[in-house]
Length: 476
Image (cartoon, rainbow, N blue to C red; front, side, top):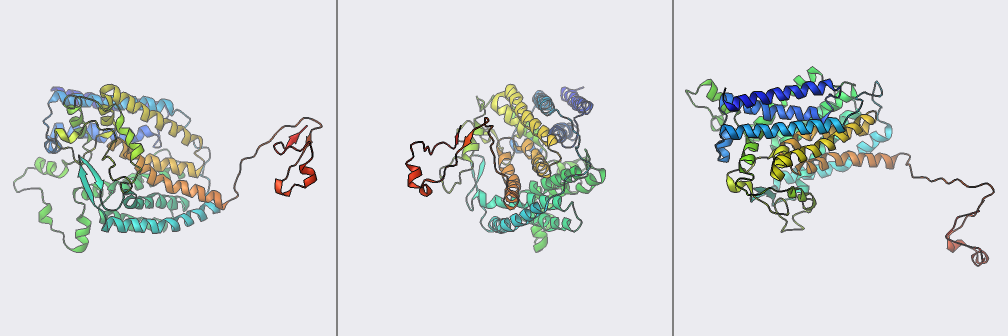
């Protein structure tokens, strides 16, 4: 058996062993971050290399300008397996808890929460509408050294429309997925398909809704009927990815199917299959191959994690800092200098490899596993709290984006998806009976308490008393 096929068999066996151990621990639920990572790993690091092996998928290799040999492919399989093992150990170990619901039904949303959500929606709706308009009329990007930067409206203006997703999720959670409330999804998905931008936003919204419904019905796994209902989302995701203006042209009557026919007469079934499915979607194995092939052999260095310094520069609008670096503030190397990596993502594993090779993968995946494991334990300790559950589940739905992109992109997604929920909590507190911190002191027997008034209201005789002390409120 050729070396790549043998390594791919070992990759699949390791994947199944980890699933078996995960189930045996009693920690496995749909709410565990390892469950999400296993799904991602299966898609891009097991199924994708299988397609490369069986159907000779090579579109992305040709696009990036590399010709990987079997030894390189085996090395990439090993890198992805290391990432899986480390993440599994860290997330399960630090997230260990009793995954049991404390109540048979979730706590209902109180009237103040409903009022606060309505007020928040009315407040953010004009912001979202303005963002949508700016995205259609003033959206422009420029490629600088392999990184796209906005040159029209600011990134804040363009991406503010992403707040619509968590608002919809919150509304459906409050109404317990009332059939009439579900109609709000129709215009949202229609617009996202029409705009052709941020296609991940509606996919991850449906993932978040599925997680929320599963939590509300006190299940630990998505019901089968729900998974079947969610399947049409992924073909839509693929179609929009291949042609961002497809829906818009169908509505305006400008659609020309002859321009999008990638098959030719006389092609075999295998060739038609490759022409249809061999693309950049879910091709992170191919991208990781490019990263491993070039770092550090051709780059001559690792990044040592300095790319994460972009967390401190990214929030600054480019209009306020015209010379802001495109990407990390500390320059290391540009992957586009060794081929064509434009529009591709390194993945979380690849980001670790760029930071420090095998050790970088271990550290990066361990830190991610620890962070998400602690979040998982926090969720189960407060699983009866509807606001805690909503924040965690919306964040959990964002994880595929982090696993796919690597780097700091997850911070921007979390900002736009969690900030409306945090504002909702704040508004609920303001509308309700606010709790303020209180302090208590044990006083000895026969203690005397002296009440002091503001100096402006103090009588002159009292103010001149020799024992007056405005800095003390208790005497004994």
